[in-house]
Image (cartoon, rainbow, N blue to C red):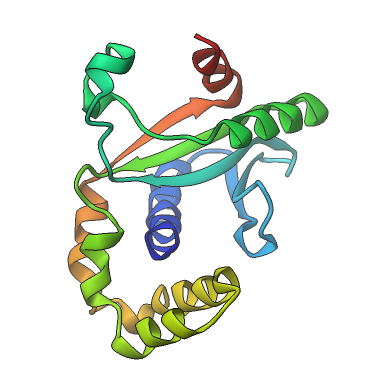
Length: 175
């Protein structure tokens, strides 16, 4: 989850670059904890598309054998998320887009050594970990912890955002 939180922060930096001088705005929805992280709106405030931001760092090593693609050309996207996004897109009548920050080799195990021991201990003793994990990720994603994760944040600026619509993801999942 921490990588997801840091990815959202990277997207917010990136969003300022892509909207500068354009008649677009990007409205954050992350705090609502829904299937939509951001809405892209036109100059009148009407939604143009929904964005769901994802992080991808683990390569699909058997991609060539299983799907005929280079491991660097693949990323994981849960089929239930694709299906739900497609339903939302049909309901709203505007596109639903997944934006995936891809940094091969950056994974939770690479981030773990930077997580303070107190947080690791809490995660090891608390049941119902999702809420606790979200709270820890939110705390560690705050600017005052940026120095601890600066190396990871630097790698994120080198990462590539990949875009795929719900419709295209659904079509690919059917093949």
